[in-house]
Image 1 (cartoon, rainbow, N blue to C red):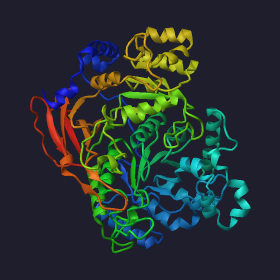
Image 2 (image 1 turned 90 degrees about the vertical axis):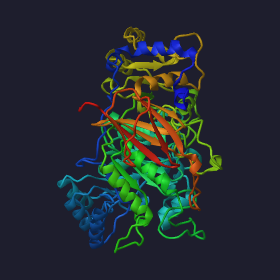
Image 3 (image 1 turned 180 degrees about the vertical axis):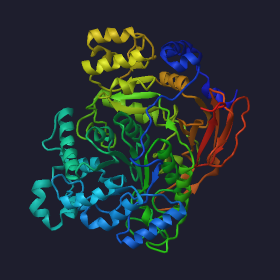
Image 4 (image 1 turned 45 degrees about the vertical axis):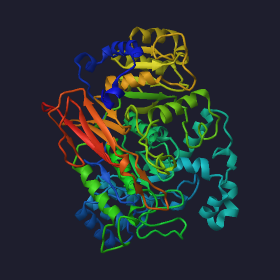
Amino acid sequence: MTMASRRWKAAAGRTVLRACLTVWMAGFAWAESGEIFNSMPSLRLLPGEDQVVFTLYGCPSDPEVLRSLVAFMNESGLGRGFDPGPTAVAASEPLIAYLAEIGWPAIFYPPDGGRMQVKGGTSVVGEDDEKTLRLMDRTGTFSAIQLGEWGYHFHQLQGDTGWWRAVLGGDFDEQQKDFVIPRENRGFLPLPQTREECYRQLREYFYWHRQAKRGRIISVTGHSHYEAYAAEWGADVIGLEIGENIRFTQSKFAFARGAARQWNIPWTVQVSPWFGNSVTTRGELQHGSSPVTGLDAGHSLSLYRRMWLHAWFAGAAMITPENSINYFFVDDGPPWELTSHGREAARINQFMQGHDRGNPHTPLLIILDHLAGYAPFHGKTWGVLEKTAGDRQIHHLLERRLFFGEQRIAYPDMDRNPEADYLHPTPYGEICDVMLNTVTAQTMTRYPFILLAGEVSLSRFFSLELCRAAAHGSMILMNQAHARSIPDDLLTRLTATGNLRIMDASGVSGAQPMPDTEAIPASVLEEIAATTMPVRIGGDPVQYQINRNRAGWVVELINNDGVFKEGKNPAVVWPEATASVELAPAFDFSSATEWMTGQVLEPRNSIISIDIPPGEIRFVEFRDPRPR
C-alpha cells in the first residue's frame, strides 16, 4: 500500500459514517451525477481592473521621478499601481492626475497620516482634497484611502502613552485627556460588559473614520479578525496585513474571502517585511542598527514568495509587498535597478498575469454569530471579554482543526524556526470560508456544507434562511444547543428537508454530546473533504488549495518546511525537507501540467506524483478532456 493510499484509507469503523454522508449528499447535483463542481461565488477584482494588481509600496513625491519609475515598472513587468500612493490631499494633485491619466490604481495615504487611526483627530479629507481625488473617479481608476491596522490601534495603542506622545508631539500634555484611554480598557470607553456594547463602540470608531475619509475606505487589519465587520460597515475593500509578527494567516484568509463573498467586494493582501526587531531593506545586513536592516533581514524571500502566490491563488484582488520601494531597488532613485528580491517580484507578477487562477473551491461555509468578535491575537473576545466555551470552540476549529498540521516534515531546528508558524499544512485543504449569521440563503446555497460554530443566535429570521438553504440542498451541521434555540415550527421545517444533522461526538445521531471545544468531529471533516474535494492529496503533509478555472482544476501545493529564518540572519535551507506528494483526481483529465516548472506530469495508476523543494510552491493544472 502506498503512502497516499494509507492516508486515504478510512478506518473500518467509519463505514457507517461514510454511508450517512453519502445519503446527506443526495440533494447535490454532483452527488447524483458523480461530478464535483465549484458553485462558490466568484471573487471580485478591483473596479476597472481585469487582472490581479501587484503593487509597489511607496510612491515618489516628484512627478518626473514617478514617471521614470512607472516606465521602469512597465518595462520590467514589476506590476502596476501603488499601495500606498500619494497622500490624499490637494497638494498631491500632480501625482494623482498622472495616475488617473495612466489608469493605475492607488491606495492613498491618509491626510496627516501619522494620526490616521485617531478618532476625532486631524486625519480628515477636506473639500479641496476631495476635488483632487475625483480626478481618479473621472477616468474610472480605482482608488481608496487606507485605514491601516485599525483593530490593533483600537485595542493596543489607545492606552499607549509612548505612542500618543509620538503622534501628538507638543500637543500631548494638552490633548491627552481627550484621547488616551486607560490601558486596561483595551480601547473601549466606557469598559463594555457585553458583546453588543463592544460591537457598538468598535462600529462607532470605524464609522467616524469612514466619514472622515468621505467613504473612500480600504480597511486593513493585521492582528485582528474584524474583516467581516469592516465589510458590513461599508469598506470599499477588505485588506489584510500578513507577515510582520502576525500569526493566524490562513484563518484570516478564510474570514476575508468569506466577507468578500458575502458582501460582493474585493479583498487584498499586504505582506509586511517586519519580523521581530528587523525589517527587509536594500543593502547588506546591518546588525548594529535597530531594527536590523538589509536584504537578508526580515522574512525570507521564500516566505514572501509563498505569501504573494498564495494570496493570489486564494482570490485576492491586489497583492502589496510592504516597504518594497526600499528593497526592490538597489538605490532609492533612478536609474532604477532591481535587487534579487525585486527580480523575483517581477517574475512572480508576470506568472500571476500569465495564468488563470480560477475561483477557490471552498465547499464548507462556517457561520459565526454576528457578535462573535473573534480575536485570537488579543486572547479575549472583542479583545476585552473573557472567552466562553463557544469562543474556545471557534478557536479550536480554526487554529487547530483546519489550519494547523499536527504533522510536518522533520528537519533540524524546525520546532525553533521563527518562521514556521506563519503558514501550516492543511489536513483538509483550504476548504472553508467564514461568514456571520447576517448572511442570506441566497449566498449560503452556494455551499454544500454549512457549519454553525460557537454560540450562534438562531433568530427567527436566520432560522428561516437556514430552512431555505437546506431546502435548496445545503447540508446544515449544528450541535444540540443550536437546535434547541431554533423556533419549534422552523426546526420541524428544517428537519423535514432531510438536510439537517445535529452532531454528537461521533458525527452522526447518538447520545453522547461533543466536547465543548468541538464544533465538528475530525471524522466528519475528513468525509466532507473526501466527498467534495475533486483531488485527493496524499504523501507528506503540505498546505493545499484547489481552484476551478476555465480549463479544469488547479491544485496549489505549498511546502512550508525546510527554510529556517531569523529576522537578523540570512535564511538557511534544508534540502532533505523536500515534500513528496501524490494527487489522485476524482475526474477524467486530458493532461496535467505544473505551472512553475512547465513540467508535463504523467500519471501512474491514475496518480500524479510530484516533489516540492523546501519552501517552494507548485501548481498542478488538470485540463478537462472536453472544452467547457
